Length: 335
Image 1 (cartoon, one colour):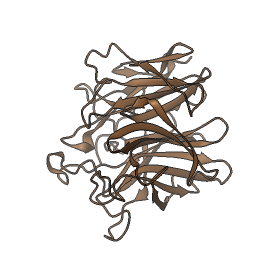
Image 2 (cartoon, rainbow, N blue to C red; image 1 turned 90 degrees about the vertical axis):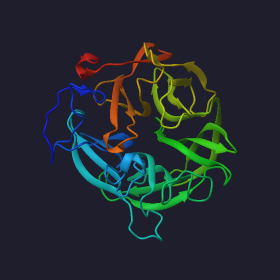
Image 3 (cartoon, rainbow, N blue to C red; image 1 turned 30 degrees about the vertical axis):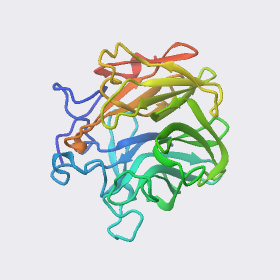
Image 4 (cartoon, helix red, strand yellow; image 1 turned 45 degrees about the vertical axis):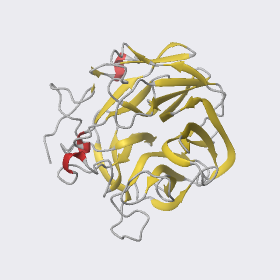
């Protein structure tokens, strides 16, 4: 247990004058490439718990997990209480979830018809190395009847066909209740974002999908809907190295999508403010206020990755932008 801090603002990155973002017990928040879901007056932040030093010397293997997906809760978005592990790794070498492995980019949506919280991930089996063989590039699914309970692993598959390796993914629940799995599909290095409609229970794929032709060789998608448009933030394919963001706009999730360029204003280094997009979520009770979550990866010690949370701004109804702020408060963007 470390130093306890009560926050009253967002503090971005690992800046010298700031501590890393700590939970209410004083421990570093370790929830890589996850998302946010709001349930009954609380926000729940979840992500894959990465392996710290000395378990991952010089960062080697730190991008994998031996713990699983963890969750935190908050009423104000600034201060987060650790809820525990919601999707556990296994110590059984015969189990799908034997660690170290990867539950990359976990995302959770609630199904109003079934009353289940459904999580989809980019699944990579032990030892957590990306590949093309079965088990190394999959879409994995788990579900639970409570947001912070223990999720049951339901297995993995590949959307469309077995040829398309799964890379970065996200989930989006549309205004009509339909849910979509959006992922970087890789077939012989032809990489392009695809939108897959999920079944009514969100536990499998339908045959309704679209290839986003404008989003070739893009990953790390994060989607919001506002002013009659869908906006999707993405990253280029540069591994752990940062690159310029690019966003796309559509009036239908299945497209067509229009390339809108880099949303980051005054990003002089062309690095998405030295981070990569993770998720976008609306702030409850503040219509039109969305937060873009990004992660600043620390490849020398993955436990010390940091988070860049910025308000999404709308210069016009049909465009968005991100402006870097070392610190900011919700009240600055919604009175």
